[in-house]
Amino acid sequence: MIIAVDPAAAKPPYEQVKDQISGLIRTGELAQGTRLPTVRQLAGDLGLAVNTVARAYKELEAERLVETRGRNGTFVLASRSRVDDEETRAAATVFARAARRANLSLPEATELLHRAW
Image (cartoon, rainbow, N blue to C red; front, side, top):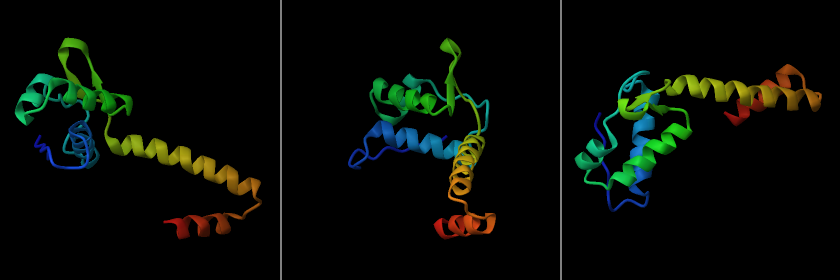
């Protein structure tokens, strides 16, 4: 896992770490079940404070991308594509209900989606 933090960037370091790990999960480079480096190890490798990496891991956990299993470490919980699929399905359901309430036909709703794409 290769992560780089730019101290001069507008984004705080914890967000840079979080975004890069999230991206690696999304692309499949970090597969489900992969053990992430310890907070101390990654902080040392990146020259960051332990709390900075801990916050990134905490936010990834809140997004249900990773899971911390106590002293066993932090693991990739699910592929991002599966999380995206769940979110997309939920959004599609909300959209379909709204389209039906508006009395749109399926072709009309599909056209709206096509234009939004």
